[in-house]
Length: 410
Image 1 (cartoon, rainbow, N blue to C red):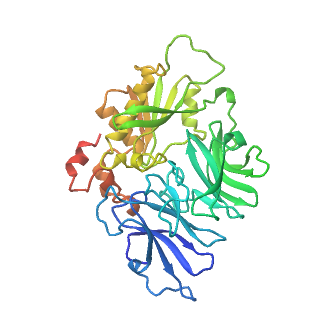
Image 2 (image 1 turned 90 degrees about the vertical axis):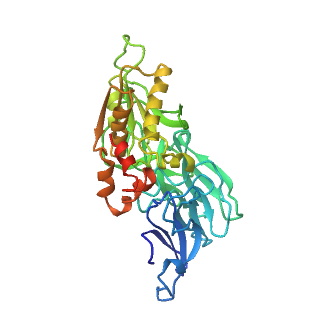
Image 3 (image 1 turned 180 degrees about the vertical axis):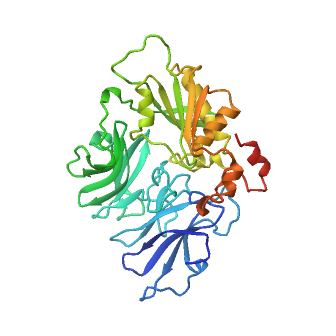
């Protein structure tokens, strides 16, 4: 296929006669506006035309758009059903990444939940849903800060039926995704606040505790010093924002000299991404030493629907900074943090938010930017193709909006 800036997720139909793929143009990112196209293959594997416009448009926005628009639709993760041969995909047209199939205008599983995974569109090969050998749908999403496995029958009607959900009470870890299967055994990436992440297996029939098969670390942390996060929702200038609060935890010590602990606020990278709850030594180090930590999913983060994700359109360096400050103030008001001992850190895009919060607000007394963005102009002028027009949506077109780029540089 030719004629577009980007192509991804080629998926060959079970009978080998059709090829589905995603495509999009600058200045869009995959979570802004993409198209799902379908081409028919000749017996020798070739096609009559390689021009993208000649291939059937299944779903998605206008691939020729030169600006980002509120009506844009993002299509991700196409997948053929192994037995019915039907083409499925994720679309955010409802406001959330819900599941659709070719020929249906309504989602087969309408929910106020994103099924695309933790940061859909950033990497090739991401898959927030799959199909079991018996044809059932298998998908994951996050509910109240915890991962949920959903199974459903999608073969008997245009709407999913026989829906069941599994979570921590069934032996699954707090966070997991990328699920695949062999028979009744599921395999996935996952993690807990107490142990480094890795590859797990879980038996769908016995539903015992998930088994950690492999991990990049053998580190074992005593539960006596592990802080388990609680999802918090707090007010912010654009409504509500989200984060994970880790209270100080170390059973070997008791503090009787302070009414509220010092707080470290963390800003994730991306910025169109999200934080997670798997073991993070950079969090547990501080909580085991008397600090509270707030890991913020500021406006623009993934996993909370399209409107929340698009809060950063034209507002990077405003909304994210507002939200990390609002989160810190909220915890102070609740008596969970000391107003005079508030710190912030973050890497990459989170480093930019950290620098901006320190430069443009008077909330934090200390901060650390890890490989953070300091010059927005330098970032716009020197980066790789995939992100080379990313800032068009986050800040504005450069150099047309040069004044804004300079004003928001910390």
